[in-house]
Amino acid sequence: MLTRTVIAAFFLTLGACASSPDYVEADDAYDYGYSSRKIAENRYRVNFNGRNRADVQETRDFALLRAAELTLAEGYDWFEVVDRETMTTESRDYRAPAAEFGYHETRYVEQDCGLLACRRSVRPARYQTTRIGFDTSRPAERHAHSIEIVMGKGDEPEDGHAYNARDVMKTIYEQA
Image (cartoon, rainbow, N blue to C red; front, side, top):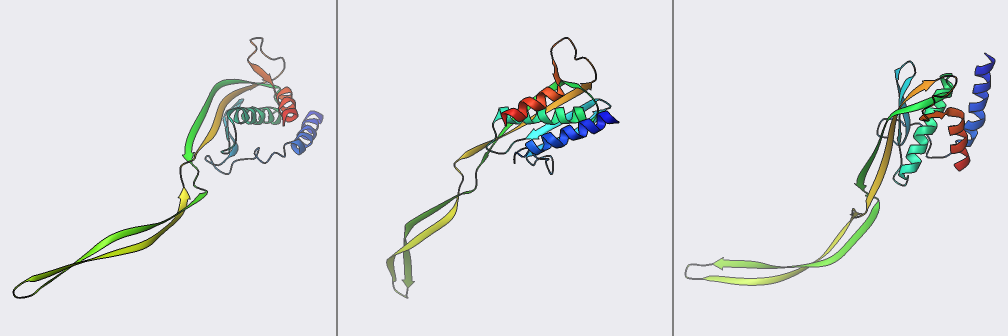
């Protein structure tokens, strides 16, 4: 019981440091932020969707940070990443306004026919044109990182693929 209290206090202390506006829980699967899903007793799928300005490394770090938080919250000491995937999507930034002004020239052709002959007249016309819209020429990249983790207690495996949850949290918070 005391251990859970210490862990809760640890989270509250570190939670104050996690005030980064980019490290938030996602509202849905396509929103920016972290999300996680329990697969088995000690196995989770952790996702982090970055904003347009987030780089690949930031999305990876935040996915590891969420994995470390889950590991400690579930009462484990370390986790191992057994599957990982980074996705990059490119979209257009529709927020840049653009305006075009110009002239459009045309000709009107009129034909008036009587009993014996037709009379044809051509009348030029010039119109001012205005188009206000959004410039879609600038692409924006968005990165997402997904990892599947297995959690464990006690000593970390000797193979060197496991992460100590407390060390991960400490390192990422120091970098922020």
